[in-house]
Amino acid sequence: MSKSKITIPVAAAVIAVAAAWPLTTFAANTTATQVVEVAAEQSAKEVIQSLAGQALTELTDKSIPDEVRRKKFTSLMDQYFEMDVVSRFVLGRYWRSISKEEISEFSKLLQNYLALNYANQFKELNGDEFVVGNETENNKDTFVSSQFVRPDGPPVNISWRMREFNNQYKIIDVSIEGLSMGITQRDEFTSVIQKNGGDVSALTKALKDKTGL
Image (tube, rainbow, N blue to C red; front, side, top):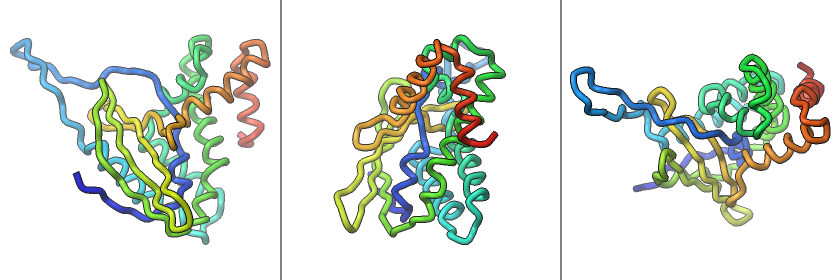
């Protein structure tokens, strides 16, 4: 399969975290026991290409205010990531101790926290080349390989882990040079929760303080 190239800053690789393990969507024939798999509207590779193109268009304009850039960043996360399952993953076992409403609140805080940390990096567009590679299947998930090819250093290898939700591929993890961003974030958050006696609200408060929400 041929590779596609889009110019985009390296910061595009760090806008994701990880997820848990829901089932792939299927549709059943109403007159028989046959089960027919529903094709996704876009391939996993096409989703990554779309994300890269939108990030390049919407986030790299140096003239827009930082707050606008952060809002655009969170909108891209809404579109391309399955944030509820991402939130459950980064909370580890502690997500079971909070309500659905608290999960939803945490998901929004997580988006704003990531936007605060990463969105403004897109102002530093340096002409690096983003190359989308092949798709591979592993059980329920599809992995899309990619690289940032840099003029002043070795390429950065990035693997996007994706799964179908309602016939659409969503990103559920990003690994940069083999390091899962979701696991890294989970370790950070678990440490905060554990230091506060297993109280998830302590993490929520910390995120509110950091994001100003």
